[in-house]
Length: 190
Picture 1 (cartoon, rainbow, N blue to C red):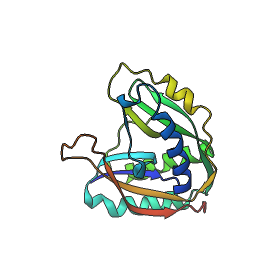
Picture 2: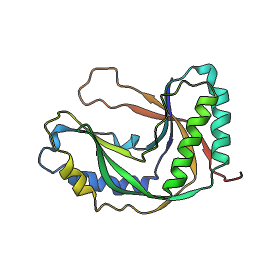
Picture 3: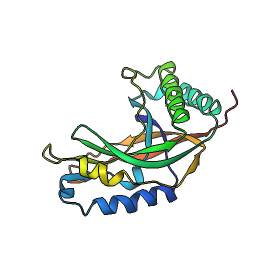
């Protein structure tokens, strides 16, 4: 199954972001963007890709320990950015060091459980809001519009293991579906 570890913002904070994204949808060229599915908005911490079912018990135990060693921390959705000409995202502010630490712990948990992981890179907190359908669209005006976005703060208290179901029907605009397989409370016990 295709898995990743994530932090999922609460519905109130996602609604704030949704209102901001609605405004971006009225900007020139917005039809060239494929907006991501709002029920699937999340911060990916460690992307595991296809993981064998037999690895799940050890992976769950290790992710649970990683969550238990991480104290809850404040976070808010904040600003925006882009990766090349392809991905538009909103970022985070607040407990970024703690978020990076949780991402590193989730990545290490997956590796130790035997999940083949891509090479390690520095974690960049982002929540993808759109992907560009063409290289002709300049994402900078969208990033500038997101610059002033400040979501309300919440306390991150959970690490989630999420399964992604990729679209397979060939329906235009079909989005991946995400299913939380398991979740662990943060604890900060060590």
